[in-house]
Image 1 (cartoon, rainbow, N blue to C red):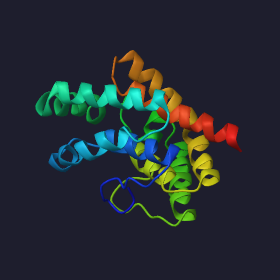
Image 2: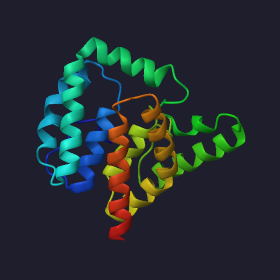
Image 3: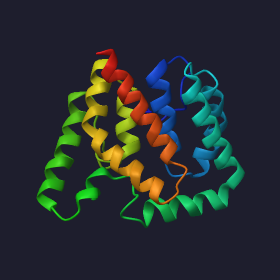
Image 4: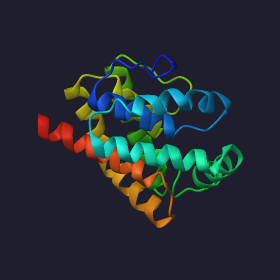
Length: 183
């Protein structure tokens, strides 16, 4: 969440789903594990049965893996792999000019919506999802549609790598589609 706090329970629909997905994609440090029960409880409040089911299954998977095994899998998948890391502009790592322009566009997205990312690069997927979760539907749709091609590519790479996080990408795309239809 932009304020760095635990998910408040008074958020609706896409907002709650995106906030939970954002958290689940973050590095599983001790604070992440401490907050996991609150996020697990928040999942039960999601209206969409499909979203609730996918998030519950993912959290069950994480808990089943255990702290050490899940952290090792996370580091292997996201910190040491250029194909599956969570920085969206690295997907075009052959064209540094394009990467720079895209990074600037992400930075502008944050600034135009009243946020600045000073502890994270602006192309970091959890930060972008957190931003979308904090915005009104029309602005959230703009953020999500701007990252949709990257999320689709990441999803396909997650599937190829057999990562459970591919289901989280499904949820992001589902919420994006819902906001596109609603407008």
